[in-house]
Structure formats: C-alpha cells, structure tokens
Amino acid sequence: MKFFGLLSVIIVGFLLLSATKDFPNWGDEDSPANSGPVSSFYIEKTEEKTKVPNMVTAVLADYRGYDTMFETVVIFIAGIGIIAVLRTYGNNESIPKNQVGDEGAGLLARMTCSLILPFIQLFALYVVAHGHHSPGGGFQGGVMLGASYILLALAYGLARAKSCFSEKRTLVFAALGIFIYVGWGVLCLVMGSEFLNYSALDSILPGGVEMARSHSMLAVEIGVALTVTAIMFSMFSNLSTKGRLDKGL
Amino acid sequence: MDIIIASFLEDSIVPKFNYWIYVILMMIGLYAMITKNNLIKKLIGMAIFQTAIILLYVSVGVKADANIPIISHHGEKDHVEHAQNENLDSASEGSSHHGSKKEYHVIDKNKFANPLPHVLMLTAIVVGVSTLGLALAISQKVHGSFGTLEEDEILDQLRPGGHD
Image 1 (tube, each protein chain N blue to C red):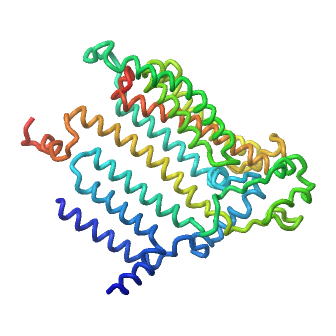
Image 2 (cartoon, chains in turn orange, blue):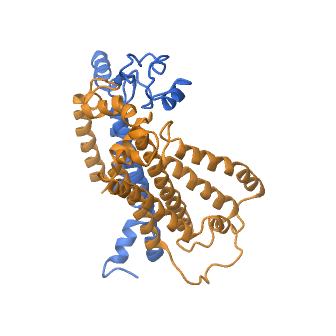
Image 3 (cartoon, chains in turn red, green):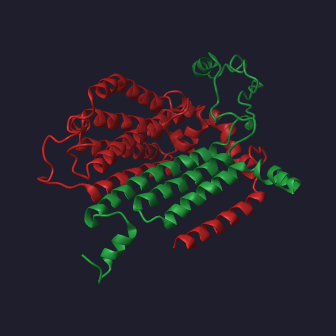
C-alpha cells in the first residue's frame, strides 16, 4: 500500500513537473492569467466604478457577489453540520464536576487575555469596517472576532465565553449574517434591478452610484463577518467539548 | 555534466520555482492522504494539499514589479475625492499614475498584482476551513463509536466476521 501510494504520487508529481515548462515564469506580467481582459478590467476599473481601492474586496463583494453569498452559506452549512454531527443533549454523568480546566487557564494567561481581548476585538471590527480600503474584509475580520471569543474560552473557561456568546446567540448571529447578505440582494431586486446589483441602491444611499456600491459592499461584509464569527466560535466550542458544550479545553 | 545541471537549474527550476514548491507540497499532501493510516493524519495531508493549490494560484498572480492590489490614496487626495466628485483637477495631482484630468484613474495594471487569484483563493480558504471543521467533527464521532482513529482497525470492526 505504501509502495503503490508512493509510486502514484511520484507519477503525478512527475507529470505535473513536466508540464511546468509550458507554464509562465515567476512574476511574468504578460502571462495569460495576468494580461487577460478580466483581471485587467478589475485592476483598471474597480476604483472608477465602485470607489473601492481594495480590488480584492470589490471583486469579492460586488462582481462576484453570488460566489461570496454562497460561500457564506457554505460556512453556515458547515457549522450546522458540525452541530448536527456532534451536539449531544441531556445529562452527562460521565463527566465529573469541577475537573481540571473548569476555571480556564492560570492567572497570568487570564490577566493577559483580559488586557488584549478588547484590542483584538476592536482591531477585528476595524478590519471588517475598513476592509474595502485596506487589507481585510468580512471573512478576515470575522475570523479574528471569532478567535477573540475562542481566546476568552481558552483563558476563562467555556462557560464564561458562553455567557457572552451563547449557543442560541451564535445560531441567531450566523443566520442573521446570511439574512443581511441575501436581504441586501433582495433590496436591490425591490429597487428594480437585478439581484445583488448594488447600483440600484443609489436612490436610497448617499453619494451616487459608485458610493452606493461601496456602501453595499460594507453591508454585505458585515453580514459575512457576523456569520463567520458565530460559526467559528460554534465550531470551536463543539469540537473542543465533543458536542457537550460544558467545558472547554 | 555540471553544465547540464546548471542549465537545467537556470531554465526550469529558478524561473519556475513556485511550481516546484507547489508540486512538492502537493506530493507530500497526496502521499499523506493515500498512505497514512490515521484519519487525522489524512486530514493534515488534505490541508497541505489545499495549501499547495492556494500557493499555485497566488503565485500565478504575481507580477515582477507589482504591489498589493490596493490602490493607495496619497494623503488628502482621498478626502478631496469624497468631498467634491466633480472637481477632479486637484485630485489628479500627487501621484505618478494619475495622469490626465478627464480620466483621473489611469492605472498601470502592471503596478498591481492580479486580484483575481486572491479572490478565488479566499473562497478556497473558506471552503477549506469548512471542510476541515466538518471532517474533524466526523472523525471525532468516528472515534466516539469505534474507539480508534486508525483506518485498518475501523475496517476490522466493520467487517462482518471481525472481532467486536
């Protein structure tokens, strides 16, 4: 088994490596991927058309809005799937009360966490809110915000983190994020344009068509961030307690 | 012999080293997925495989003299643009690639990395996290019902004539 595995891996690797001589060189500006019309359009026109200097966010939240919407739905489904697979209810006699790890980490770790947690959360919110002007966006900021709750659970015990972000609240937030995203698309539909065509919203958002698209990107990023935050914390709390949600690591 | 190796290095490894790295990483991941007996090790192999693919795509989008695909605003130009959209004459100065006054966004596309692979790989990373989380949950459940994560022991228990 090991031999055949190694053999097939080496064959695949050899085939891929022998194909690389037709690939463009490292950093080639004229390669098909870099000189194609699509990426050139994104680089040259995004700021003119959307007033968003971060092209990645602009492409992600506007031009490929459908993709990102269903990406958020993928995260949501993964979180729901983890809950469906792992979550157990009822009494757990097998777990003794007040076992090690109940009260979280030691004093130093707890003090450090209580000092840096507000800054982590503030920075996460900045990454979400400023994601279309600087590196960042809904996914990145959402992961950081979720990580701050995971840090809280590691330092102070899962019960403390759950008092901030209970299981019900995680699910409500996860669904609310998708609701914001889809609702924003439906709003475009109501305003008389296509689904997720943000330029239809210029009559209700200030600043003209371009700024309407920019603001809409912020709105859908906030939705994405809500979902990602909730699902990240839900994943951690379910995986670390085998679905019992009683005590963390 | 030395000349052959040197020319091989110069022609196919040095200008295309990103492909070599991705192929080697992919081989490591694929080998782990095929031959490793432990389910968690298989998942680690899958993560390495995903990383290799992400590396391939992002390295394809690299341009030699390019920066990140974010158009930087120079100081107060940002505010000028937001405050007065029509008065573009004052906004177009201060930057080398903001040329004429009609089109104040004359952007040299070779100054910015290709944003499209970044966007696609953001999707791939997110899907990778989702699949990894779900796979970990399922392997935890497998461990709960079989008491082991070794593939051959699980198959032994699943076999009709097997022990247990």
